[in-house]
Image (cartoon, rainbow, N blue to C red; front, side, top):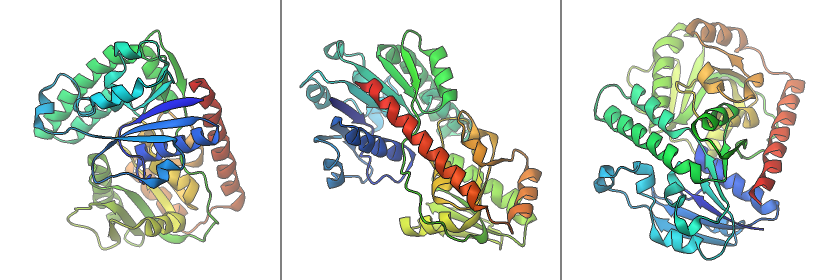
Length: 366
């Protein structure tokens, strides 16, 4: 069974949320017997990858046309910059179903030449809500104005464009409900996130609290700022490790170690040896791959707040902490306690069940 997959960016290396979901979905499709034709946009330092040739029968690469002129379109910037005519030409070479990865790739979703094709859209977020949340975290400056304008464009585009899909795949049950209310007359399904489900050999944990993420992202910077101001200073005897890309923080307490741009191997070691994973989010959108990483790769306790746990069932492996004092009390109580082996086994079994559920839904693509 052939299927076209249109990806918003080259999905390898699978080193951030969207790329992880796309790459491991491609692997699952290949393993389930699909003949995958991948169409992907090449930018941001990413280039052609031989790894993709091992799971796709054909890979087409397209440039992403960025620049200030695209800002003046009524189309959202993430869509307008992925409107490559050659993509449409290549999609029309046969009549196989098309999977559009993210709203970003949906420029041609309503094109007359694709009217009789089966069209599936994988939504990684309710995008207009995501951008509205970005605006609220950016303060009142040109960034917040940009995000608000994009949010308006995205909402307009979602309503206009998504009705042309045959199937919409939401990444969480919560977002499936939102999308059903927003887009009528289209089949909706919850398609769980795809990721590496290889559980490593358990390692003893060490007495530190880990926060990790791309620290250039506004939401993650806000989380770190909260830890530096309100959590770490009140637990001077506990080591906090902040690890991620592009950290820029002032007034770091003495009990906080900031690890800039860790290698994959170093980050994996931190994930596997942290006694406590502190998972804070400030917008209830999508699913946070860092949480899944902590569950699969980690061996420690997971503290997470409401927005990190919204819309999915992984909270069963976390301790919910919504107040500053809750975080401090739980860190104090758990920093000297390792998890039991039987609890780790329950995590493993649930993740395997989650993976099987996602794979079973791939039959809807046929």
